[in-house]
Amino acid sequence: MSENSWWNRALKVLPGGVDSPVRAFGGVGGQPVFVKRADGPYLFADDGTQYVDFIGSWGPMILGHNPPEVTEALHEQLSRGLSFGMGTDIEVELAELILSKIPGMEKLRLVNSGTEATMSAIRVARGATGRNKIIKFRGCYHGHGDSFLIQAGSGALTHGAPSSLGVTPGVAQDTLIADYNHLEQVEALFAAHANEIAAVIVEPVAGNMGCVPPKAGFLEGLRDICTKNGSVLIFDEVMTGFRVSDGGAAKRFGVHPDMITLGKIVGGGMPLAAYSGKESLMQNVSPLGKVYQAGTLSGNPMAVTAGLAQLKLLYKLNPWEDLEQKGVKLETGLRKAAEDVGTTVQINRVGSMFTVFFSKAPVIDTETALAADTKRFATFFHEMLNLGIFFPPSQFETTFIGARHSDEILDKTLAAAKIAFEKVK
Ligand SMILES: Cc1ncc(COP(=O)(O)O)c(C=O)c1O
Ligand SMILES: NCC(=O)CCC(=O)O
Image (cartoon, rainbow, N blue to C red; front, side):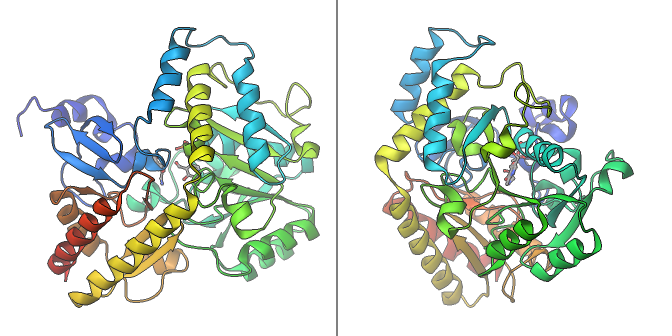
């Protein structure tokens, strides 16, 4: 590696060489890949190497890279201008489309990242209830807002810093923690903090400690507890929205929260996210109400164009059943490949989200996720990468299947996995 390689140059100017920790290969070692371009199901590194992309920009690229419908819409919008700082017809169209698809949501506000969406949602919940505390789950990740960097998942878990420095004790004391899938802990927190809890925020399918599905009754139980206690139930669907069904996790599981945050897919690969809620909650948002939230680039026309074009294409193609079948094929195939070489793995999957855990026991919460063998995962990851298959570089992330992962690609992935499992054994 030359002194003047991009990685060496990056290390000199970007902390850890990256703009987001999960890109640094901290959980698997080795040097991160620099990507030059992407097309359909593939990423191309700056040295020209082609990889099958199972990261999908960490979720957004459910239809693969550069669908012509999205690219053409962006070219057209580009000729009209990049940002206006005023309302647009397309933001209204996007809001109408989202609200027509996501059950129970009556109003939304567009923002630039999932982090902004969740930060704003809890502000609304606090404003509406006049209460300060929230409950979040250990190993769930809701972006990097201060209130959420307590026992957080994703890069925080991967890099061994689930609770970040720089979050004041004053903020931290208002975030109560329970274990995912452990309703009794939520009940205990409500018993100990009656009338203090503004909101419970949850990833309806956890994706940031690896993929961990909700146990039967868990989401329903949260719904009941929040209703009983006058607390706001927030589904953070930044990852699951438009992915686990055509109406996200709320529709897939038939449980209806009071607020839903969206990101990733909703922006089609551009910086766009949203928080949504019942009218009674969203009427608190400024300028209608007294909860302030704003943004110079919120509803940016380029981002809205990408999001709108991808969502329209998504509903036209209706890929969810096909994604489920691809998921089944990968899950069964991976399980068989592991069995064939005599290695034990746990494969958790919900629709097109899955994680291969190098673990002997089922993974149902953070404790069991952390019991996985991250060294074996690292070997598996690098073997797959060498064979041209790019899985997320951490045991505690979710692998995303996309509509452009053809049968042939899935077969190639399974063949690679068998070789990789053999090496890990
Ligand atoms: C469930 C969930 N919520 C929130 C976020 C934060 O979104 P962003 O990275 O766009 O700030 C993420 C991913 O990063 C996520 O997976
Ligand atoms: N599952 C984790 C993410 O999607 C986060 C991506 C990032 O922070 O770069």
